[in-house]
Length: 291
Image (cartoon, rainbow, N blue to C red):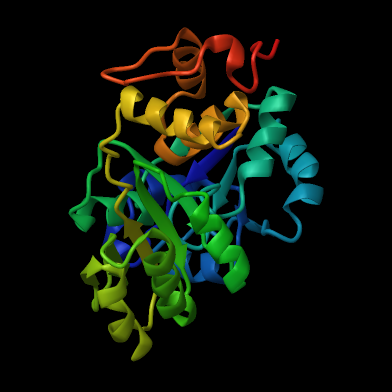
């Protein structure tokens, strides 16, 4: 089988007993960086010296079939440099190939920078989304954040310390200066630090220079105080300006998070609350409804 094994993200004492026992018995280990894994084995006092195979972003697709076949006859332990394989680390394509080939996949749970940062952030943890690394290029980064403007769940990102200030500035520009962010740095390590505050307020600190592994936890968008009736009024306003009903409903749904179908059908039904006048259904642009 394939064994996905989580490794410490900083503090070696976070290595589980099961991880150490598995490494002591392992014959083959697929590692993101064989040099890092060799150091880990020594640091954990593992006397076993398994065969180490490189599995990283540049060779995973071409190596997956070979490793899956290997896992048919021996247990293949998969390690990333830190944390859980497949989570912004190599392993996903290997697991896909294993599932397609009917090879068992199991996991040794352990440290996770994503969940650790979420836990200490002070932001809601009941619903969250992990977005991986923000894009390197400013334009791409702004586009990615723009797609998340209305995301209600807490968002978790990985980020390079060299791009932290720029990313916080873009978060402030796109999501709002006061959007609450927790910058989690060097989790579980000696110089662990968590800075919390509005995105704009953290830019000066980040601009002064930050080192270490960074996880950003960003508050989700606040709930919009909008009802179907107020959204319907906005649809009617667009329609009165000459916008087709279908397009008006789509635009207001995008802006408010209301259902496009509900807005469209409410407009067709002529629903209103206290409106002095309303256009007849047959007069509405976009009628009859699309099929």
